[in-house]
Image 1 (cartoon, rainbow over the protein chains, first blue to last red):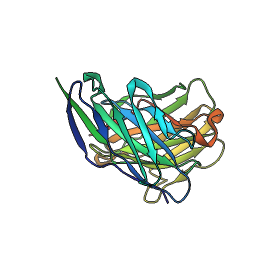
Image 2: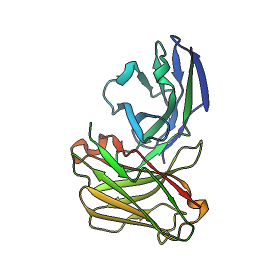
Image 3: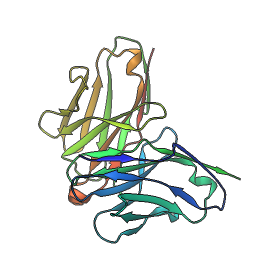
Image 4: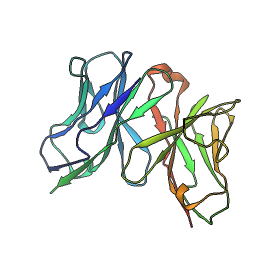
Length: 112
Length: 118
C-alpha cells in the first residue's frame, strides 16, 4: 500500500528565504513521486516528478526535490521564495499503475 | 503539457436536482480518467476511476448511484451528481494520464468544478 505524509499544514517564509516542504512516503513497491501545486479554486499543476532516474529532480519555477530512499523522503525545496510561490503544495505517490495517493497538503505563505 | 478542461467551473443548484460536470482531455487521449473530491482545507480524495467504454471503478465509501460516471470517448468523462444535497457541496477535480506517459506519466488535472447545493 502507498501513503504520503506531509509534515506541516502551513509553512511561512519571507521573500527570498529558503523554502522547504517535507514529504515522507510509504510504498510497498518502488515508488513514483510527484509534487503538485494548487492555486485557489484551480486544479493541480505538476511541479516535478521522480521516476527512478536521478534522485535529485529539478522542476518548474526553480523548485527541486531529492529522493532519499533510506529516509523514505521526497522533500521539496527552493533556494529563494517569491511572492508568487504562495499556494498549496501536494506530494503524491503512485505505484506505477493508475492510483495516486496524495498527502494532506502544505499551504505556503510568503511574507514580503 | 497536456491540457484537461472541466466544465462548468462553478455551479449552484437547488437541493434535489442533478448536476453534470464534464472533463475533457483537449490534446491527448485518455483511456482512464480519475475523479477527485476536495473538501475545504483537505487533500484530494479519489472517488472513482473512469474507464473508457466500461463501468467506472468506485472507491470504498463512494455511492455509485449518487455519483454517476460515464466515459463515452477517449477524451470525455462526465460526473453526474444525482439528487444533490448540501453535503455534496465540494470542489470536484478530474484528472487524466496521457497514454504516451505510460505508467510513469503524471496526472494532468482539470481546473476543478465548485459545486454549491442550496
